[in-house]
Length: 282
Image (cartoon, rainbow, N blue to C red):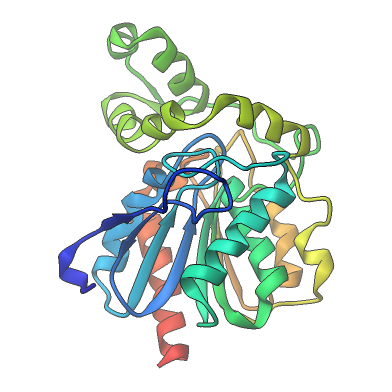
């Protein structure tokens, strides 16, 4: 597929869960696996597409994790290890033995690090956006903030939508709602709720990925939001010892969905990451 044709959707037949995860593919060249967060789907990461579309040579694979979007559910216990194994199967099937890069946001950041631990020499680098690092109760979190709030807008929303929007959004205004409605809400509505509840009981990998290797020499990017009250920005600094060629950025005026709150900043950082990878690849 050429860059100009735009995204196309691919999926295997329904169940069992051993089937290929649903994904949206665009472009050609070096594979980039993009992994979304908890209880959402690949549409959260589509706002990053303009960064790739401006550059040739990248085959984007926007994945729906098990039980999310249009992907099959896991056939056994829903654990972090099972999620990681499903992603590994996807990579082995769709990417094969090619070198590839990974973008992971929130929970997907943990799975991206798992890929580094499992396929280290094959991974060119990762872009970790608001990545999950610590379990709930052990995170260093900033105080919850709201930078903008439109009471008339909020009053007009469906109560269920308003509740989840206001629990996450730093900007509770038209711009914030439009981004949330288009890129977050569809996945929230599509995920399997029983599986999500089960995953919470085994949310983090039993082995921290970085405990399985000393350092990864790929090109890495870690982007956090200064006002991210869900995973924070301080704990992610601990990753840098294991990624000696990592760029770390904490973005002011951004919450957990840092790429929606500050798209220009995140696009610039991601573009620089891709250009660095391309220079090394070429």
